Every structure is written in C-alpha cells, then in structure tokens.
Length: 190
Image (cartoon, rainbow, N blue to C red; front, side, top):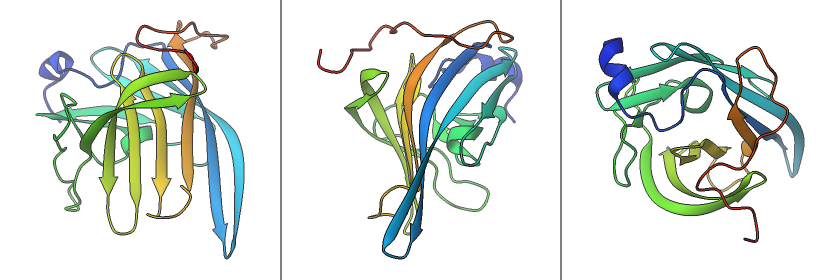
C-alpha cells in the first residue's frame, strides 16, 4: 500500500469525505437458458473511516462487498466498484490502471460521454475492464462518483447494473433522506 500521507495527496476519482453516500437501483439478471430473470434491489454505499483511511461500506444489492480504499502510485481501488482491479489516477481518457497480481489488466479510461440515470444527466468518464469472458464498465463523474455500472458477459444483458438514484453528504450516523442536485448535474430533459 502506498504511504498514507502521499495517498491523501493523490486526486481521487470520486469524493471520499466520510459521510458521502450514493444510493443505486441495482438490477441483477440471471440468464436461465432462453429466459432472463431480473430482480431489482436498493444498494447504499457510504464513505466511513477517516480522510486518511476511507472505507466504503456497502449495504444491499446482490453481492455487498464493503472494503477499504486502496491507493498506490498512479492507481486506486474502490472495493464495491472495482474489486481487486485498479483505476488509474488521475482519470484521463487513454490511461490504464496497472495489471492485478493475477496478471489481468486494470481499468482503462476509454472516453468522456454523456450518461443519463435517475439522478440526472452527467458528463462522465467511461472506465472499462474488458476480457473475453466479462466486461465491467463504470461511468464516473469526478465530483459526484460512480453514476452507472454494468458487469457481465460481452454481448448479453449485464448481470449487474447499478444506476445512481441520489447522492449526498451527511453525518455518518444519519441516514440520507434526500439529495439536492450537485454542480455539473442536469436533470433529464434539460
């Protein structure tokens, strides 16, 4: 792990202030022969810990995976979104995270594009981890966080899709009630 003092100075691709939270509609699809069975759930991710040692607490969803934020020279891991794979920092089109210990490639920042989710319309960076068997894509807005995520087999409906419903910052002990739009967000149709 990169020294914590330097890790705190690296730019994070998402806000990591304790109390920052995101709420997603998570759709989980099972492919059962010719039929897809999809269920929806509510997933809540919140930054806990401290600025020097942020921890992402995930509740709800098909496979909750809370964990610490890990930072190294030129990369960051955000457990609930990236698992063991790395995003490059800073996020810029064309940059790639380093390979994992297993030798798989890290996320690649492919392009900046507009994406619309229930929380609004955003200009996001599309970050993808593509293999022959799986594609994981994160749409990240630096001052907001991950606004959309898909995971699954290439060419099929994603097995997991998360879309941002709302986000905000509250004291860690307080449950979110609502969130006002943040800078850079536009409501659908505006």
